[in-house]
Amino acid sequence: MITKGKNYFWLTGFIIINMVGLGYSFLLNNLWPLLATLSASFFIMPTWWSVIALGFAFTAYFNSGWPLLASLAFMFVGKPKRWWPIPAGIAFAIVEVFSFYLSERPLGITRGYTVMGAIITKVISPAHAETVSYWSMYEPSIDWTIALILGVVMGSFVSARYSGDFKLNLMPQLWRQSKGDSVIKRWFWTFVAGIMMGFAARIAGGCVSGLLISGTIQLAPSGFIFMFSLWVGGLVTTLLFYRTRVIVIKREQ
Image (cartoon, rainbow, N blue to C red; front, side):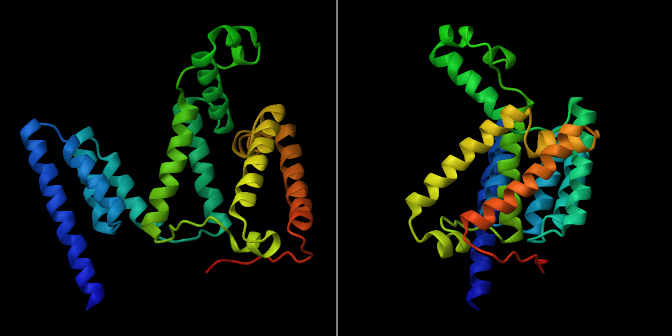
């Protein structure tokens, strides 16, 4: 009874919020208010019918069937909390093909952070940006790589909410067992690791997506060198940093 009551509560809120959005859409003769309320409702109550409602709304707005088809596909493939590597790899390969088709270049995400650095440097100190040759390689403007970063973050959040896997976790269990309960220590090492990974990616000319995946599918030697280096480095880091001698390969159910 409690679960049913909770569901009715959220369903009532969903209807009221979107009726308001629909009213403003008619008033303004624009679908954006309804799209905004439908999107907000999805994050509050991520269900299959809210996904379909979003698909219909965006299809009507763009006058194209692609949003509805995408919502139907997401309704099924977005529900599992974990994907086995084989279908996940196939899906990523499809995304890579679309990247070549739509942007005429392979995927690569760390370049976006470099572009952000170029933009910040240009805004704070334009004169300094002109004297640094490295920044001349990256035009200080919002491009597709920044859109990719935003898409990865938003897509991960939407997928986690829809699959029911989303939760705030400041302290992973493996870290707590090895390093203790200090959140500050956890965030410090996360920051250091991020700096090292970003610096290494720029030296190598790419990251996991831009060099390993995009490089290997083009049979570039640098991609295979990066792949084996990443495997060996990850294995050694796990054994040393987490102080463990056991590595378990487990298939998620």
